[in-house]
Amino acid sequence: MGAVIQFNYADWAAAFPEFGNIAEATIIGPVLAIATQYCRIDGGSPIAAESTLTQALNLMVAHVAQIMYGSTIQPLSPLVGHITDATEGSVSVSVEFPTTPENAWFVQTRYGSMYWQLVLPFRLGRYVPKVTQQVQPVSMPWPYGIY
Image 1 (cartoon, rainbow, N blue to C red):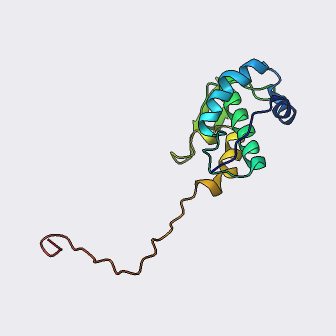
Image 2 (cartoon, rainbow, N blue to C red; image 1 turned 90 degrees about the vertical axis):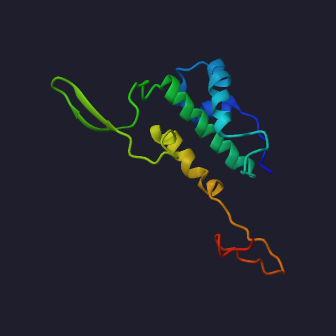
Image 3 (cartoon, rainbow, N blue to C red; image 1 turned 180 degrees about the horizontal axis):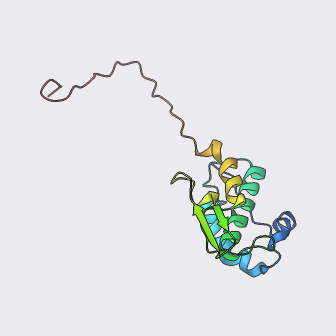
């Protein structure tokens, strides 16, 4: 069972002053609603430590805010991905999206990249073998297997 936390706008705004261009109501409204779809704060998250979950939520809110509204240090951009080449005369920009499908959305911003790394231990699957005292029969494919 994961931790249950509440979003604290004042703490978030102090940690991410570059989003001063976005109204508090916008952050608490649509941005937080989307961020909590990715980072559960209702106890359903695998993150049990409140401090870690708070950091993850703050990063996810910053990530969503950057994608939707931009910030004072990086305005909203229609480009998706990393700029690989840019020329000035006659303006041309090349963008690549060199990621796996699992993290493509997260690495669009530095906040998403930090979130992706922060929650890495909680994304890994853990195999716990069933402990039995019986030997399970090994079935073979038809026509040699158990009928």
